[in-house]
Length: 263
Image 1 (tube, rainbow, N blue to C red):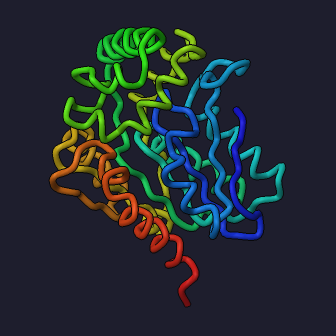
Image 2 (cartoon, rainbow, N blue to C red):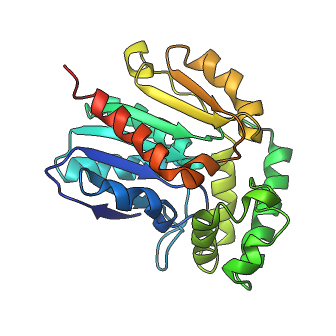
Image 3 (cartoon, rainbow, N blue to C red):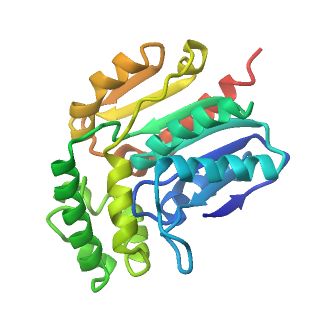
């Protein structure tokens, strides 16, 4: 794993975790607007860049982030932000940080795939993901945006989600079949780590009401983390609000961060 950092180390710290098969640049439309006020850490997952080892598990990815924090003397994180699979890694990161006495003040997770699916489902999705990434190796961003769909994005969402799709096209030539298989396993094997109520109270989950992940995950999340905060958005798709209304979305991120500093 490699770590991209933006802004001054003297500012409050935000860790931003990308969706599956994405490079760090997929979140540039957010961290470029935050780095003047925050120290933003954007990990690049294993298997997602030239010369890296394969992606293995969410647990391992989270552990490498914890190790980075410890090595750099970071014991307080203002916010963990995660999109899709990044939300699942983020929850594992919270759990591991608690054990290492690293304070996570708040977390904000958008469109997380918090599911535990059977082996057959994961096998089918692994085949789908391999086919998608192999096809991306030979096509331009414009061509991919014109696909009928890109994994979780519908046809009418692909142009909106260009920043994310562009980063997937960048990742496609370097990601191995082994990384794709392990990443698919990670996406669909969420174990709901137990968290104290006082930690749950500072976690914010958001979904578009029409997205697939909302329909399949929302009830399980509420059952597992009843003290957390839940928000649904109407008229949006998977992650589309963050791109279509970025200014409003950044206000939400800042508001969550600022609440940590209120007396």
